[in-house]
Image (tube, rainbow over all chains, first blue to last red):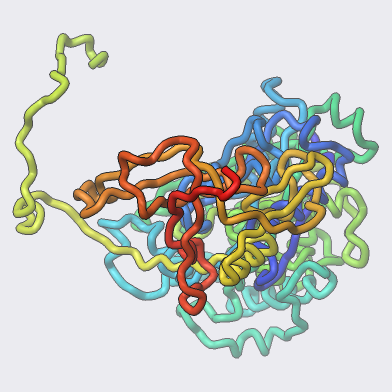
Length: 379
Length: 179
């Protein structure tokens, strides 16, 4: 089974005026190679980056990758998706015998995007959806939220609890720029910007880069005493059509099922010790907890209020601060989730350390999608 | 056409019915047009910020790697071959040698350009071999350009420079006094 043998990251910051996107990639990569104790020019068989051209602002992004990763004249490719899809690609390349050591990278230079709402609108079907309105496309998430809240009686308080929990967790994470100590009452005073969604429930954007060094079973045992095994990976897409989408994160349910099956996990709510899941809109954390089978859909609100998902709770969710605390890292979102799980499983999380042996990382491909990926890690 | 193994062949210059400008403007063809408003403002970063600011001074700057001995141009903060941080900054000259060129007659919409544009890759004097700049040539007739031609940058007046690659207007033929 392939393992993570090195991690490095740069960020995470609300803005990065001093470094270009190539330079934050370099910073994260140098740290990951040092962590793994490898030389990228000699030891790495394959480099995989994850990027979406419209987030970068120029086409054929993969051409711009090799220099800053140490990948010049080496096998390199780009996956147009979240970091966790790249991790799954590395897993397959290693398991198929194509590579013994593969590197996975994703980054966000969201602060370079001046018209973020228009970039998101540009991901909508141009004929069928995009022209309907010029409103900021965050309403797409609010549509889903409205449906989900009403169907499963999700309370506004439970959603406010997510905001309070994650922003507070972020205060113990030096790499999380959006930490804050808030109350539920305060969160419930935040204005509705996309009813029923409040401003405070929307993750602010952030910059950063994440690099993982992944090695085959044999190689991992050779080069490290503390491998973090990739026990399972999964990915799944529903549809791009907002008229037939389930609005119940079927993509998270199905990709988790795929990953759990590989990992031999039969009862996720009992077997998973820690979860980092996509909370780029606060209600998404609740929806994803249910989709990942970490709690029942009619129990999730009560459990949230009882502190079941808190850092010191029975099943800590988004101890890093999640996207609400760390920021929306675009295609690097799953990378930050996986990074937190790896750091926690290694026991290197310092003040926010949780007792854990199995962790799950999940990322959604953001609006306007019903796609996502999951990875299960263990020690 | 392999599908179905039918014996269909296509002549090299098939003549169909061309779409006219009117077919599009009068919507005889069903289309949906969109002009996305996508705006970016890229952080130039450590290496490129210095490079762009030096352009305002009418100078070209590179970085050097002491391990492989290369003068890296355009500059970056890492040597991509040795994969280590660079060891310092060094100015290179605004003269060089044409490595390859193309004479371009049409614009991206396939409309004829009023005057052909000569695009060239120029190895910059002072930088390591195979390092230089892609730019345009001027003050030269297309038929006079050749690989190996010596050229020199023609800069915009100082008060018009803005820290962009277009602060160099073009490169013109040049003879070194020592040549």
